[in-house]
Image (spheres, rainbow, N blue to C red):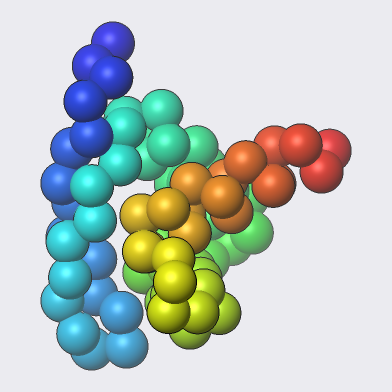
Length: 72
């Protein structure tokens, strides 16, 4: 298991960007998107739009995943 963040490309509302997350976060984020029946890019775009300016997208995705896992 690799604990170092890995960079992945996402398309957010037609704009390409890269996000670095640890493998565990990527796999859980993909699983959440699949459970919700949503493409990962759409879910990432929603998180991006709601995150504000003082939080990076990678951090916002990590917090989203954490909140989903602890809400159950």
